[in-house]
Length: 196
Image (cartoon, rainbow, N blue to C red; front, top):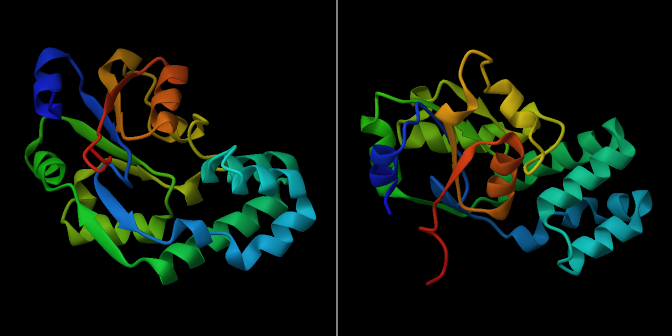
């Protein structure tokens, strides 16, 4: 089912989009995300790092676990690294043209982005596709302490006057789905970039 078809069936007014692998696919060497800070991560906690390398936890989980355990020290380290990595290593951006076209014409909705990527990357890409100003609020990894599935980002989007049943999270990952579930918000899966 397309997003258009879904929205014709349900009564949503507030659409919260994930960014990477939803609106676009960022071509980045994710396997090397932590190369420049590996020694610092190991010095803080070897187990968290090893769980990540063994695919027991995701990259978002790695960042969240370090920040939860070590606070500002870890937050500064991983956020700085995320900006450096995305800024210097981005190889290409593949758009989800159908979804971008939808955003350009769907003036009847209040739209947001809630991304685990950094603000410089998100802003640059959304400006490139001329949709930056379409979103009422853009929440990135630099605007929160913890990434999805933690629900902190939603607190910057939510207005108490809007019932939660008017929101829908539109994303590609289990983290997006889990965040929506924790918030009691519907979830719409985008699998455009998933292998067939």
